[in-house]
Length: 195
Image 1 (tube, rainbow, N blue to C red):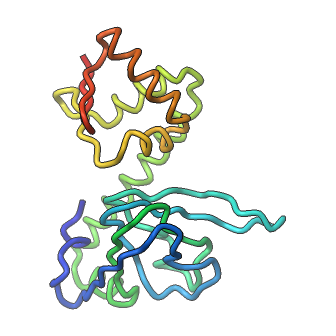
Image 2: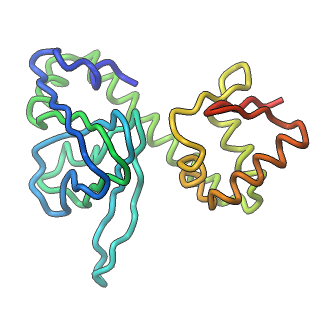
């Protein structure tokens, strides 16, 4: 992820590290936008109130992801952000962040690359969710994120991967075991290798 999101001493940015307990709100739908957020650790669930009054899950942001990017160009948050696990969040003042990007074209380009990657990954994940076979969905995910050595070093738990690709974690674990038995992949703690 970008150094810009992790470098807490870079003027004029003065990021603040927030520690959230599970269930704590980062912001509420309708709040005035004052900040931009980066997930350092944990998991942030984005929900939106529907016309019927129900809560719809929009997205779950995991480590190394930004939260509510569109809020940089909005007056109010169009969703709520809730910690779904103990989380550490880096918060930037919206005006400072935008000013920094305006003054630093290279940083602006880096941020655009991050946002473009996140959009590409979201589209790929949505496409994977249309694959009916759990086995084929898992293989599609591995092929999408593996390096040139056919390895995946996960920054999230296997349960989070299951959620991300739309599988029950029990189904995900079962299919991983089947792929291991069939010698299609090797699995260790947060590591997968496609054979």
